[in-house]
Image (cartoon, rainbow, N blue to C red; front, side, top):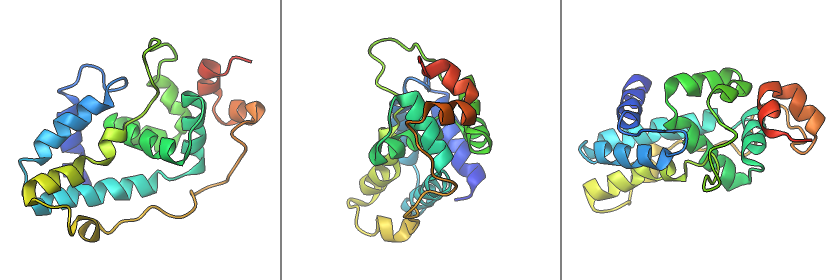
Length: 180
């Protein structure tokens, strides 16, 4: 599956959700429904493109932005953040990869006390779940997808706890999320 078809499916799923920023799981649910109607090879194609994008976004600068806006980001937390980022659609994805500070246009520092962070964990399993539903088994899925995240994020590592560094790298996000 090419990138254009991938993003068409994501955008169609996004159209079914009122607030994708706060409800990436709604996007995941709608996407799962759409993928469930596709043949197994197309589901694998979607999964391969998703994994390719996850590897592309495995970067220190995005991890720093995730750390800042979520008040921390473990390895898993950064995976979930990248799932959330896909759920925001192609335009926001591309803007964030070009400049992570552009996420200041998307996130809201006051989404209410029940908001648990910019977390799209549900997006991570959409394709494999659809594949399992279509074929009756997960067997062969990961081998067919074949993309792996690099061992080390791309770019320059930096101290996520250094507030001066965060302000320099992400001035707009820092203005929203740093209180000191």
